[in-house]
Image (cartoon, rainbow, N blue to C red):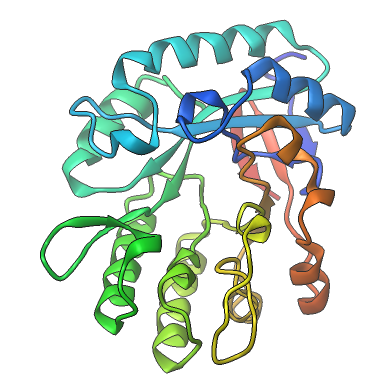
Length: 278
């Protein structure tokens, strides 16, 4: 398939949030994901390993920096070898101002990667220590820190879409005015910047938690997506696969979110391995 061919892809036939053994908390070789994607009649598959950093920050959740070229070389080889499915080579990036210039110089301006997906996985706690979002205390201050970090990522304009924007639901258990206001702020920023937001399938594989609105998934949170729908956000779905079998969207009940709210997930146009939401 020529890289210059303009192709259009339905939202349920493309997955742009895909991991593998490289992340350290998943499994499977890149080619195994492609084999499954073909069986599922996907028209495109994007790999988005957690981006490693030169100082090995957040190293427990991603490949070592020394592996980055090996990952990209493997992905680029598979990209060339497959002419019946489009393969994209990208990264899920934890946005942080300390690395903004490095991301631009080493990932974007030199076309090292096809796309970047925005994520916020770590936030400073009350002691100033970085903690994984799922381990943060239930606190209004923490949800605002997460929200500010996510919006800063959107405003950087480095990313083609934002993943699991409602990840704060892992620690901010209840739905209240604070959760509503933070959700509105994230969604409105994405709308203003015309950046799609992702309903995340990985969250739908997790156990439900008890909240003041009843049992719910830690994420995605229906209340968040009600706001996204009402504000006119571009909404996409990705499986966030960590094993090849995770690519099958039938394994997660994402339609419980989309159907109940009347959401039609958007698709993508790809030209020269570049993404444009449609």
